[in-house]
Image (cartoon, rainbow, N blue to C red; front, top):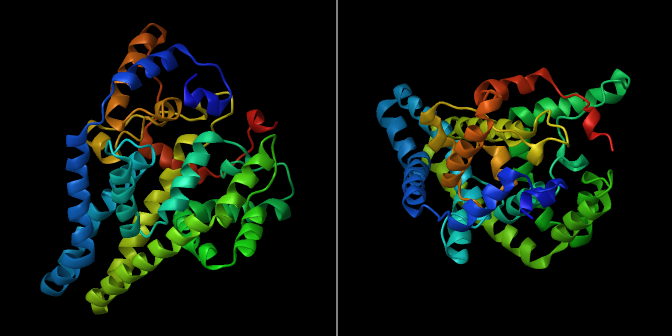
Length: 340
């Protein structure tokens, strides 16, 4: 059975069978990955080293460079994401090494991000993984903290939380385990198992050591960058904040309002063709959850197969990606299909 079907607790569908066959013959597109990696590497060099020089030389007009740096946020994350699934390069060490370097440049703790993402695949839309679900029938005094948390998460809170995760690696293992146990409840039929996985991760000595090392490298990089920016340091802070907002908005977008009985517990979106490479086909998120071993370049072909199969019933009704991102600001809500 397809890993995505296992994760959602449902049987493999006909499209799942197509995905299994596709995954066996879909090779990693090294040329595409190297092209995007080159672009992102140039953007990283620009942000940390060239931008402060250009700000001093050009002044305010140089601020326009913030736009491409922010636009490339999903590409930067997408390369890390492909490596998490072993689809960036064929070699495991190369995958991890490149992804770890990219994560350091994004101030992300790679080991924690990788673990959290794989847990997200394994336990999609379980209680710990539903930031958009809130019982509106409860009194306002009981639910308003959830509303504040929800909007804070959308406006960069998710990224800010990821920046704080490495601090757990500097606390004692017992303290880290206790804090994580409080954050990850045992709600739901697999809640105890989920909490056990997270607390075990928080106390793992090898992972804690790597997180501490990567955090120190990240700290050194950003201290150097802020020094190079000098009096222009707010520009670096603003750029990172905007990139964090994009990451936070995109994180739960494909699962927002999705019930547990929907395929992959996720949805696909439609985007203009020019954005597909920038997003690394992250708009085809349902297909990714159903077929997580497929490289990003193989998803459009699978999407075309599904659209051809659905043509008799009126074709795809996939919502628009960017409009859906804005619709998240309508707020969280309760879903009948999530009460179990």
